[in-house]
Picture 1 (spheres, one colour):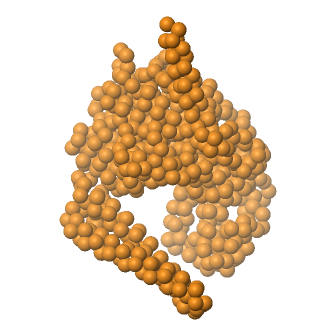
Picture 2 (tube, one colour; picture 1 turned 90 degrees about the vertical axis):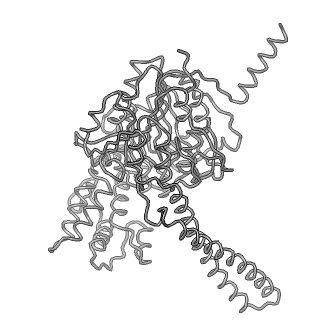
Length: 578
């Protein structure tokens, strides 16, 4: 008996040491992913809410939190495909890969497992339904941009409820159709021959460079250098073209017609709705659904542009409808992505980012209301796949209130500016300046926190003139990178300068328009939430901190990995003991 007890204690200690977590099945599982959302994005929203005397983010008021590492298998800075796969499947993969291990072997997602175990499944997003994060839960592609193929996998998944943006590339371009297969194969063979020719030329050039270096023939060495550069350009062009040709061939060989028609043929009810009306009419028992809100080919409307529109198809609305449609005695798994948080951060569009975070938070509140009615049976997990933008908050809370002056997204402004360019008549610059004030709250005259100084006005007026197709020799810039871009003949754009000014007036700074390695914050509430976020088995390398460059934001050392989330999700969607 003592030996049995000792063995049990040893096994328990081993599990603790390895960071293993054993979780029981949960009937209702909500997974919220804020794409591009890390500590700075959540902190910016909270500081804004505090400055405007509003309640803090609900997600930050949840009871349990862990700092989460997001690195890909092949890069410390991940992307949505690799991180989405880790979260969905519990296994690391390389950037750009979906539902596949680095060696190309298939991975099973928690959503697929949930369906096998009798649960209904919903996949919701504010971006397109076959974008990287949602596709990580049903797709298996070595390239996240294989949108058409991901669309076919979406249909084949048999999941019960897809809602949000449209299916991108629902009909592939003509070069990726079955009748073009012979031409594509010829094209691929020619490109492969071109790449082989480049490889042989590279070997010859390298040998020639070595010989020229030995003999001290600088002129010959420089000639080889020039040839090397040209050959590298030739190789890259052929390599890129080969990638697209292979993608087209794979699409052509798996062509099923328009994805939405294919979905209907496979039992889906497809809803296109520019308002809530048609989606609102859906009732339990209607069968499998693909509900597309707002546009027929793109994402949902920006939260900031939908303000005041009672018919706007928001994530919160789609989450509520998902609960209504999916609820059943076997439970459900629902993934809800705030995808446009990432898009706004890529554009360094702070005011738009703020509204996307708040809209995402509203969707979590809907799930929390459901959890109140099923407290023992519901788990809610909120995380991010990576940070986007290198956001810093060096300003004051009072400055952050200025984000409220922005009333429209950069996309809205850009569209209106293009329309203005096409109009006839004079005084376009005055109209463009009025548009800046309408969209961003920036003032060209007067006093106040959103009034621009002389350099800022000069730079923005010059950018507006160029955007309207008029000549502008203005090279004065309030921002060094913008001024340098103008002097180099590159237009940084009126949109870029306007969003940068809003950030500046709001006490925000951006370090990049790409992703960073910053950990994200994972939060949880409900059934087994504390156990779900138990520390993982991170290596010392994985525990190293990544900084926000803002000393006012303290980011805890990573305690779990995004793949831990996927592993644990698979446990909680195991068969229910009914």
